[in-house]
Amino acid sequence: MTTVEKTGLYLAIVFIATLLCLIAFSGNGILDYRAIMQKEEAVQDQTRIVELENQKLENEVNALKTDMEYIKHLAKHEHDMIEEDELMFKDKPDNKGNTP
Image 1 (cartoon, rainbow, N blue to C red):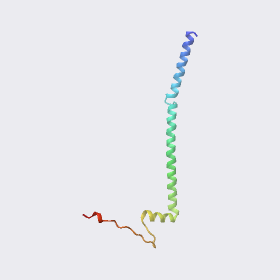
Image 2: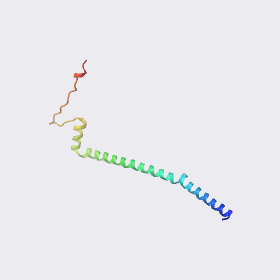
Image 3: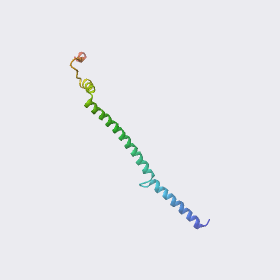
Image 4: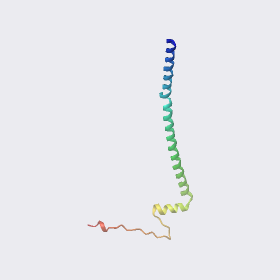
């Protein structure tokens, strides 16, 4: 191999190595692509969670509009309401240990 051929070979190797570095580490390179794909996956996961929550809320709104049994259940358990023919018993707080 002559000196010109060796120089050409070395230049080709340096040129190819430089191109590979540019492909991997440039602003639009492989590493940036992988980071963007990870961010996209995280955003899609958040979107799925929000969609499930929206569906749950939409079902609850529809139940509140149409389902009288659900409305009664909420009134009884969340707002301590009773129907006309029911009795409610509440415990009195114990004050025995609080007096000096």
